[in-house]
Length: 383
Image (cartoon, rainbow, N blue to C red; front, top):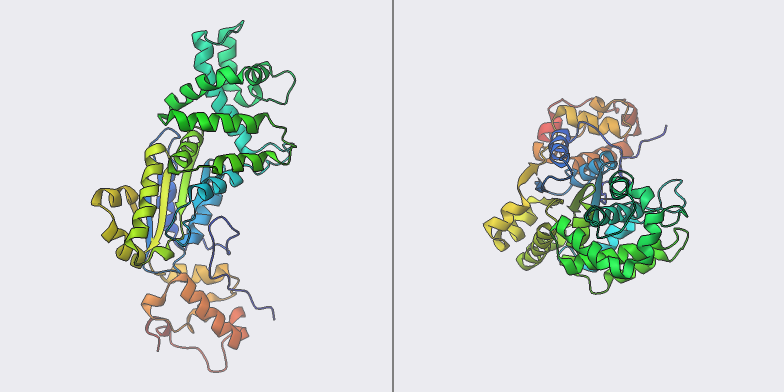
């Protein structure tokens, strides 16, 4: 008999997830999804996802949200080193690596190519409308920039006149584009100019050039700081919702100084990119031992504008969890778990189920062991 696998018990945001059980943490997921489904121009929110301890499914829930909203949202992981130090260069590299993956059947174009073309169109449009950029038909040119930015700024198409004119005149035009785009984002002109130049050189390079992404990563990492990362997010958030996810903070447990550094970095990012949504995923012990004593009430409030808490599993969610892992008759297995109420969270349930099935494989198909069924109350009181 084939025994279903109940692992993995541990997951990492942005990687393949374990089988999903829709009922587990469904209410929390719906609350976060509603908050994230805001118009692109709406201010971002600080979402605090909490659980009593590790193993309640925070990472799994975040991964399901990322997959479900992939068409309209850009989810970017922020991974503090040792859980307590945020490296701006690593944060930028993580963001750009995701954005520079080739799109399907695109000849090597990436999401970042599309973002760059939209931004150049946004920056050039007011210059065309004002007449600062000469063109024969101002109205038609502005309409093309608004409605067809990807085609208008196709640097690799021989008939894309605007794109080729921009490339030939970028040395003079670049500062004006940067100024207009910084006005749109209300961000730092210096940092905006850095990204406009970096994205221009990336966009004009051939998509078939294997080194263009590497050159961008190297340029962006040199001298990176929180302001540069925040400006990148501000540019991206003009086009679609951007969600920054912090999901590995165990290293900051008992370290208020580490919590203060992480929170300070996040505060800078939110200041530079006010449209960005931020999700901080943390266990109660880490929050209470590190963030609460380290942060002012105002900064804690900024991180927790929308608090969302995961709880233990009720009967419906317990059965859904086991059924989602391939257990034919989860009720039969539940009768044998022998867990106390506080142990009814995903990781502990799966670990206990795996131990039982290893000893008694027939439980995977719903059969009872030779010792007979246990009383239904055994999973509640551990008897």
